[in-house]
Image (tube, rainbow, N blue to C red; front, top):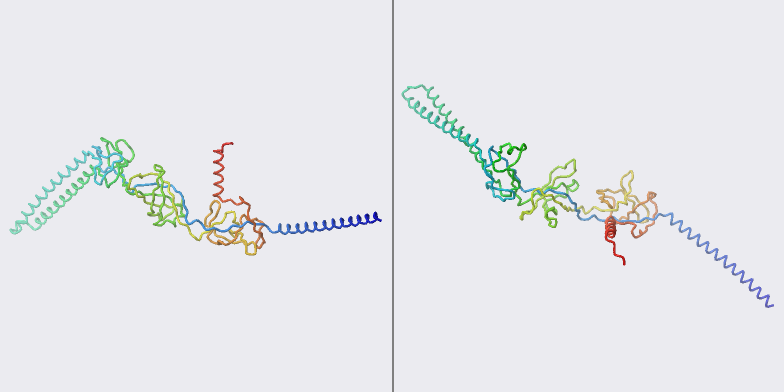
Length: 409
């Protein structure tokens, strides 16, 4: 009897185990089917990473080459021909207005001046004789010893001689002005930046010195109490050039010193070859440290439009209708929005119209996305989207570590 009971218990246990196994298998397969269904539904909805439009920086700095020139700079040429008698100011000499720079011997001019003075004395003598003659003829008018015609002729002759005297006087004054050019003087306060003559050199008013064929100035005088800075600014920045704009200037001879240049004027025309406009700044040079002709590195900071937003360049979509971005609506569906791009930078673009700061913009949108598609927003893995600045820093760190490897333990 006991053996029969034990056999029944074994059968019941076996049936229960089989039932449990079949139920577990059914439950597991149902769970797998449900998971597969969920995975299929999730795979049908594409994942997207979003970005937001950010305000552009309040200002932008550009670095441009520039040329520094003197406030005034005058090349001095000879006005008379002759030989250099002596020069008195050399390179770098500081001069005042009217200081004598050199003297010229001009024997030919001296002779012409003496001839002009002699001609003047001769004409004065003729004029005095004409005056005596006309007085005598006029005195004979009362006695009717001479005709009125004769008297008129003598009066006209006196006027003619007077005109000849005036002409001779002007000729003397002309040579007197030329004689003053025998002395070369400084036109204003400044410094001598060039001297091309030596004692005994023959010079002429055509600018030739001794046997030189080209036109050459005798001296150059520069007024450097204030300097002019000339730079070629890209046409896109012209609208920012205003009287309150300043620039930071560095010159090679003083690499650790910064000068401040103030905006003076801008040419009202753009060079069609370079698409730049010549802009002039002024630099205070009280210590006379800046020299004419110096090369300058100019950092120009200009304010930007506060309404401009920036988005990642990878978010742009190019279609026949124009440039667009894919935005995600409140119900997580795709909507393509037209944008107006004002400037394309390295990793970002500046946008003036089409997006706002609150728009959810799809970064790196797939070409399979269509208008109205439902999407699932995900957070990119670390390092998925790296800005241009971070990439540059990473590259610089790698290069530094390769050059200076850490010592092994």
